[in-house]
Every structure is written in structure tokens, then in C-alpha cells.
Amino acid sequence: MRSKIKLLKKRYNTGLKFIEDPMHVAVDKLSSNEINKKPYRYDIINFLIKNFNREAHYLEIGVRNPKVNFDKINSSHKYSVDPCIELEGVPIDFMMTSDIFFEKLNNNEVLSNEMKFDVIFIDGLHLAEQVERDISNSLKFLKDDGFIVMHDCNPPSEYHASENYSYRLSPAKDYWNGTTWKAFVKSRQSNDYYSCCIDTDWGVGIISKKINLGNPSSTANPFYEFNVLNSNRKESLNLKSFEEFKELILKNDKLIE
Image (cartoon, rainbow, N blue to C red; front, side):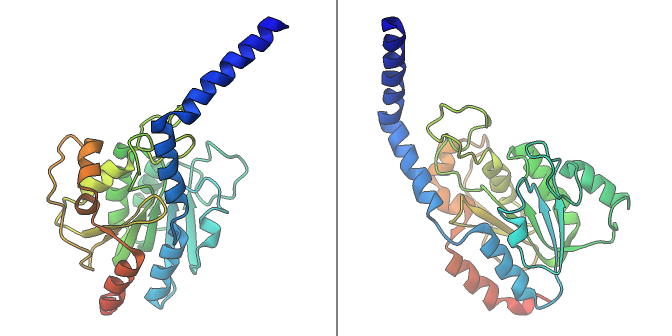
């Protein structure tokens, strides 16, 4: 009995070291700060859809739980893509990976290869290589005046930006943005479209073919190091408040057909 109490006490003290560790405390504050930011991703998406003043077509890549975002989207036509690995029995339109969906879409095996979306929301596998493919595929099926919206583009710490979602002793705990930011930063170097990141809800990235959201990034970060991002966050991501973003869109609403 004594040995069991001793073991429990040792585990408690070990846990206390993690909880009281300065790095854990600092990262926990960053998480709390991000959680309290508004508006949420669906508020931004609904703003864009409403501004079209037409029947919009919305595509969501990476749904997981529809109650979190998909069900809150006010669009005339909505389509969801998710392989449903994490949750079973979820009502998804296309239960497959985004790679397979876009391949089938391109081959006219689902919907129509002439289909163009007004808003495509990317929130699937949070790893840069996959996100880059999702951006590239989405651009092919995006209307000229449409928008790609991306979640998790502004991780508050390197722990939130880990490649490993399963590591639970991280100071970031269950909050995970993955390496989405790398794909977004890479897209920020393109001259083929415009992009910015709204500083809310873990970073909501926006890509537009038509509306000038800002100049491409000039920050050199060839190896996509987090410390470089952290030191040049505003320029690298073209960070904007939601109010600044709304002003840009409303100023250029004549470009939205």
C-alpha cells in the first residue's frame, strides 16, 4: 500500500513539474488567447458568401464534425469531403480523401468537371505537403471571383505547429495546427493570386484570384523555419484584422460578379 501511495505521489509531482513549467505556462496562455479571438472561421465564410448576392456553391475539405463549421455555413449549395477516419456515422457527401475527390471531380465521376465553387474551405490533413495539393487542386475548380479559405495558418507557437498530432505531453496539449502554415507561406510567394491571413481562430488564410489582398511575401524562409515565421509573422502571412479584410472586400465588391 505504501509503495502504491509513493508511486502516485511521484506521478503527481512529475505532472506538477509539467503544469508549472514556464514554457508550458507561456504556451497555455497563447492557446487561451487564440481561443478567445473572434470572429470564427464560419463567420468569415458566411460574410464572403453573403457578399456574392447569388446562389453560392461551397465546398468543405476536412469536415470531421459538421456541427463545428459545415452546418453553420449559409450557402445555397454545400458539399463536404472527408474520409471519416476520426468519426464514424457522420453525414458526408463524399467520404474519401481530398486527393481522390479532386481526381474523381476532374474525371467527371463526381458532380461535374465543369463545376466551379464560390468558396472552398481547406481544413483537412494539417501537413504542408497535403495542404499544398489541396490549394493547387482547389484553384482549378474555383470561380474567378471566388475564395479559398484556410484554417490553422497562424500557429501561436512551434508546439502548435508540430507535425505530430498524437504527442500529448506537448505544451500545446490538444491544440494542433500542424504545418499548414508552411503551405500558406509558400503560396504567399506566388504572383498568380493574392492572399492574406485574418488574425483570428488560429489564422484564417484567404486566397483570391481577383481581389488584391496584398503583395506577395518578401521574407526569405527557404527552409520554412518556425523562428523565421515568428520573427516576420505580419509580413510572412500578410496578417490583417477582420475589419481590415472586410474593408478590402467591400472596397472591391465590384470585382465580385
